[in-house]
Length: 362
Image 1 (tube, one colour):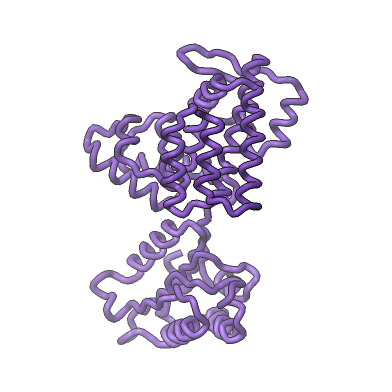
Image 2 (image 1 turned 120 degrees about the vertical axis):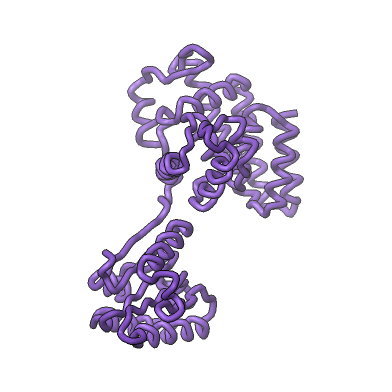
C-alpha cells in the first residue's frame, strides 16, 4: 500500500480517520523532510469560495514536482465537500473535483503522492472511483445501528486495553462503554487516563473506572434511564437539569425514559412467567420461552434482550422488580402524555420532564 500514489481515508470515525492519515503521512515524509516534502491543504471549509480555493491549491500542489526530484506529498486534509452537501452540489466545486479526479485517473507524476482524508465520500462520484482505481482506499465508519456500534466499540475497547497493558473484567468494560460512549477519541482519552493512574498494576477496578472517567452526554442520558429504573428521584432530576444545560434534545430524553419503561415491562413479564430465573449470587439468566415469544424477540426487536450482557440483565431485572406491571403501564402512559406536551404546547421542557419524574417516582 505504501507504494501507491493516491490514498483516500474516510469515514465517520473521526479519530481513526485522522490518526490513520497522520500515521500514513509521517511514514511517507520523515519529520526532517516535511518543510520541503509535505504540503497540507485544509479541506475543512464551509463555503463554495473556500472550497474552490482549497481545490485549486490541491490541484496545483499535485501538479508540481518535489525539489530535486525528491518525493512530494500533498495531504488534502478533512475534506468536507466530497459528497452531496450544499458545497458539494455547487457546479464550480463539482467541476474542480472532477478535474482532480481526472488527474488521479491519468496518473500523477513520479514522486508525487496525494493523501486525502474526509469524514464522508460519495462512492458514486468519479473522485471515489478514480481513487479506488488508481490508489488505496480505507473506510473507517461506526455502524449506524446502535447494537452494532456497541459491538464494534467493545472490540475496539479490548484492543485499547491490551495495547495499554490494562485488565478490566467484562462487567466493568460494559459499564465503561455505557459511561463513556462509543466515540473512539473519547474512549482513547479515557483509557489513557486509566493507564496513567493504574500504572504497572494494570488492573482497573469498577470503582476506579467510575471515579476517573468522564461521563458522555449519551451516557448521562443512559444514567437518567437508570435513575428512573432504580426510582432515584434526586439523581433523575439532577441529570435532567444537567442534560438540558448540555443542550440535549428533550424529546430524546423522553424517548429514553419510554424505552426504559418498555424494557422493564418485558423484564417484569419475564420474571413473572419464569422466563428469567435466579442463577445464584444475585444473578439471573434467561431460560426457555414460548415459541411465539422467541419469534418476537428475534424478529420484532432491534436487539434480542437475551443477547444483553449478563451484568446488564441483572441490573434490569433488579429494576423491574421495583415496579408492578400496573405501575409500569401507568408510567408508560404518563411518558407518552409528556411526549405529546413537549411537541404540542409551549411549556418549558424542564418543567415537563421534572413533572413527569415527580409523578412517576415521588
